[in-house]
Length: 204
Image 1 (cartoon, rainbow, N blue to C red):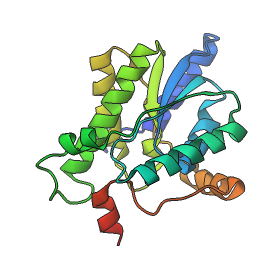
Image 2: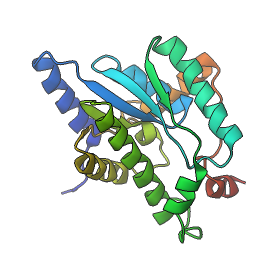
Image 3: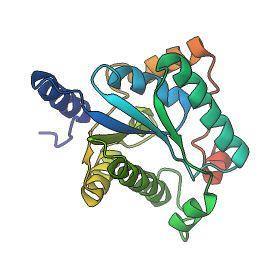
């Protein structure tokens, strides 16, 4: 018997429970870029009041950071007008410190885990600061990222910060394909690498 957890099913069960109780909770959504944000917001907006949090110190240049942030804001002005969006300052030194000593780690290895932990921890802390009921991330929509790892890290960060983490695997039920459709519909910039200098080198 497989021990794999279906995080999409867990999310659906939690949301169904909220609906039964007539709840519409607040959620902080960590966003990495406009394409990933598109389908996730479309899915969450039916049941949550969403606070968007663009916090990506892993991005390799200020130009890339500002481009992804501006595209995210442009998308949200159309998809979720009036949404509250927090764009963190560009702080690459924070990422560099988090992955120090892991520079030679292969793509998808311990360096990526450290990066995920960093961004999820910062997101959980911001969710607690903003008194959100829940928090989660768009990162699980990517077919290139380990949803089980992201959910384990997200849960741990939430417990440390005192805020509930909404489990997810947003690529399920056609989520990734929907992000492609919405990217075409809104003419979004789609980057061809995860964001850090190491992933850019890997993509060449």
